[in-house]
Image 1 (spheres, rainbow, N blue to C red):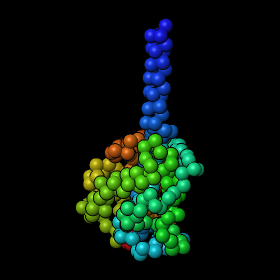
Image 2: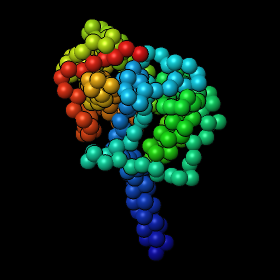
Image 3: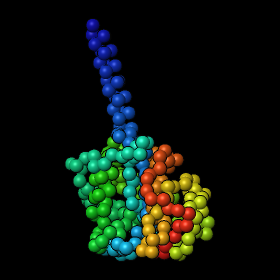
Image 4: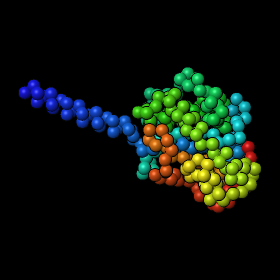
Length: 230
């Protein structure tokens, strides 16, 4: 009888652990989007932009966010209202965040509200994998692996206000990084389509880039895309 109880308990624990591991593996998501943003396109709109208090960011693709997503195109958000952003938890990487994850929103600010939004809306939905520090550190690490601007420059695509085809842009990035991103465009004041954001897909454990299982929505870019200076 004691042996039977032990076996029942062992089976119950095993099932419970397996379920917890499966739940923790994805925790309501299947992959991440790492979204990079070209600052020149953010600023070259009717709403314009404001440089952060730390000064004008570098002319490079900065991070917009690291967003948990599902294969059906939906995504979790605001998963833990009790886990508010705490700047003291990322104090050792704030310098990297200012340079690689800058805010351009007006009025001029220090970026804390932007990072709080990203953590509280998106990062809290991956707390099976990250604490706050780990979330921002992972995004910085992933962004550092891509070197998108170098990939484009190698193919003769520069942020000089010139126009390029979608095929040239995606081909250059795929050649340089190994992955073709989803390209998101916005419009300048004259209505021209311009290179704005790049969506790269990341494995659910945030360890590596993967091919995207689904593409995000958005307005079509067309095939004549401006790459504005910054």
